[in-house]
Image (tube, rainbow, N blue to C red; front, side):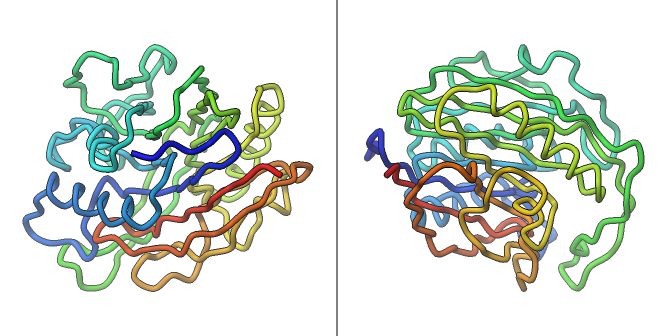
Length: 280
């Protein structure tokens, strides 16, 4: 395992869609499929930090796996953290997590059997401190387009919005990297983004913001004080036309950025994105 220097780091952002194979199949081997996908993505990016969204933990629908831990192991990343945002299953029955900080699960945590859903990260860099920021939720849901169960075409379902949060890792190498998944409701996600960026200004380190922001057309740069470090359509994975996934930094920071060509894994309706960042 190669550890990045203090001046350089390779970062990727990846919405997992809870490890769902695309197109869906009748009987999926969830563990094997996630390990294969992690190998595909890890081999392509050789990342030092992986930001994960739409992550399951011990969900029957996805093989009762701690997906963050399994991806970290598959990519050879020593440190990982998973933040459940709800207990239960999104789109079905769920409850919000009351104490987010106490709910964080890491490589040093006891094994859990609680069925949850949230965001996470994995890294080969030592972690100095983990922060959590609550971003709220929309009181209304929206119809969302998803693949049909038989893999033929798509369908709309009405989905209630879940609580949105940010998981922030202050690393020993000087970078502070945020993972988030913003609301799919227009306007609410812009409010959440600016609320998050205001909070990040209070934290130490070279700030990098990653995740599925649910905002197309480089809107995050237009409405915030951060800039997108690469332009790449990420959704839907089978015919990408929209960029929902971003890696961003403050406009005032001077960085040397090298986008890494993407790879299509066998899972998720999002493509992963990645960059190598060097401080100048």
